[in-house]
Length: 242
Image (cartoon, rainbow, N blue to C red; front, side):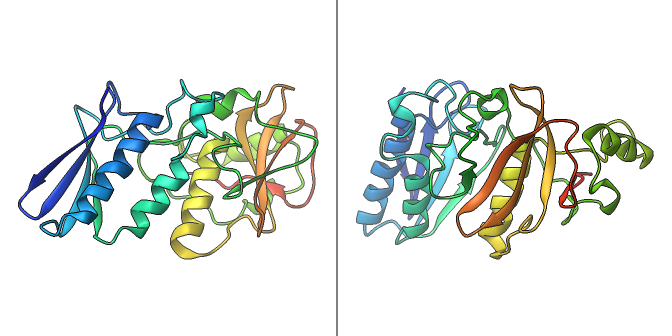
């Protein structure tokens, strides 16, 4: 694995992610991107940069083989790569094809930039933290929890969702990773904190057989917690995805 390679087509530098089979963002890829980006910025003949993926995919996101290992937080981590791409002196465009997804709730990767964990609970051993990824494509999502689902236990909420119709798949609850992905992306793009006053109860099962909920998105980040199926309170509901 070379991580990333560099070619030039006229005034455009092409940085191609190279980590078969799906170009996961392993340490070598992250380091390669920044090395080639520095090269492009230092070349006076280059006026723009394109990020592309080798083979049949752009990138499947974080490399799950590195999660829980020193390489997952070794600089440059993913946040550093994102920051340096945004700071590039020359415009950077992603040429996306095939698989282009991301996921995971690794608290080390996202420390200080999105997720705030309650002191009594950690996602380190939660199955969804390293397995789930956002659903490909874009779906409509309600900005606030559906009013009828507030102050209801999980199964009571499920009955309400079933009564809304729309087929087996839609409308539906989002997974924990989908909630985090949608909420943080929206905040990054629009500067608006969705779920600032509410909690969205996901379909992601936790190790104690409850379900993960995310909400109270404040200055310190988006909170993640597990609730048993019997819990109910006025700000805990479901923001439906269609």
